[in-house]
Length: 209
Image (cartoon, rainbow, N blue to C red):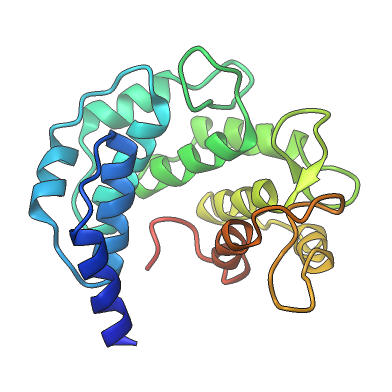
């Protein structure tokens, strides 16, 4: 296992992420692999919030993954970006969805935020749980594995119980080879979907510990 992590970290070290979200994701992965990419963390600390909300979300998560404090300016900007519905989107001009809302909850909880912003976000997520137990990305879209996994992680981060129905929904999507379908209708991108489902099944919100 240590050898595989070292090889993964070495591979990532050869790549040069450009966008802020990529920088954060690379930093998180290399931190989990036991690496400490100081150059990437310098870029994370220098991040200034803008309209790309998921860049701020992942910057907070990456810093907390490494045990660093989240800059208050980033935390405040994320709180202000919460919509009246209780949700967040990936961009300031886009409609809220469950995936970005769940990611925002995990970032804020990792930064120590409690109370009304989290309660409103939890209510937003609950409104998007379907009768089949799964969660949908946006209203009327139908349940999918990734949105359900995101919601489970956010609810756990918020100190709430996701409920057995959400886990049963994911169990129904498991394929004979161990991968997970995107939804009851589609089996697209099984590697990506499975990678997102596993932390939820392990009851681990971001940042991973």
